[in-house]
Image 1: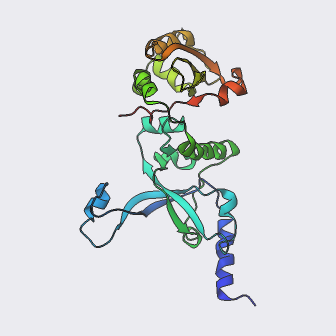
Image 2 (image 1 turned 60 degrees about the vertical axis):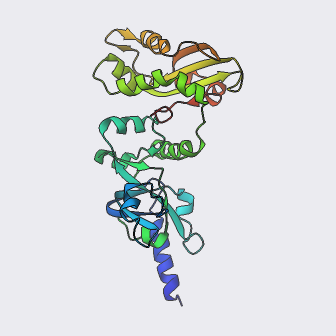
Length: 279
């Protein structure tokens, strides 16, 4: 005979079998985090710093699940916890940057992008699975490509390369240009939006006293001309923003499609994102 606990465990497990990493819940929800009442660092914690609690609740527009699907569907009797991150609203420009993996603090969630919502990966909250089982599931990723991209965003958040400080200073003009021009209604803005990724490689290594830098501007396959302006002209403009200086004595760049790169070139380079050089 099934007892009451076994019955609701089975009910939770059945409900969670429909959930996947990246799925969301929308509506009025609350994110909880612990803080130091003597030194509150956020406006939310400052508002309650004089209370006796060291926990603060912040209202959010929903949550995205970041636990891996294989762990979501395991029985809550053995794996009772699940991790979620809050959904935050961003403007169209920021949404586009996040979709192109240039803001690793955030993850693009296709299923809620129509609401300009993205996942804020800086804040993670742990819940018991019985809480999730009561939510109305909003699919976050609709196909294998979107599932893979969301997983890569989570990985990039915790595994991205820490560029040396002198490189951050060296590349700041280029990074500012990319950010400022990305959504402009001109040919350069259109070209930047056609880039799927920007990667950089240091030879022989980042630790050497003299370094050769190779920038890879990885484009989408379809477009090669922008009102008659080719990729070579844009590349020339961008490379002018990163002239040789300091220990970066050689700077090269290429605009390529992904299939033009070797696997070795890809894995030995590191992605640039706009968060690295934001002030």
